[in-house]
Length: 69
Image (cartoon, rainbow, N blue to C red; front, side):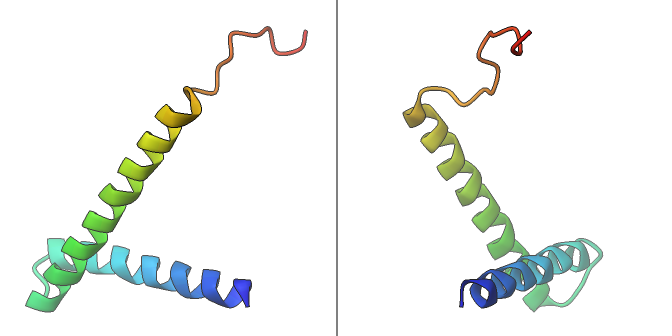
């Protein structure tokens, strides 16, 4: 069931990206709506990612170590 849900999400994301490109090239009005929704969802996801990194105490990936050498 998880595979089906993830597959649907990937297909929706790909279709949203396609609408962003199509709307940038002057597509129909509905593509501009879908493109706006896709871009808004991306900004929302980016904001959630940033806030969760701040809450976790960083998230830069470089801990200042020597890489185990």
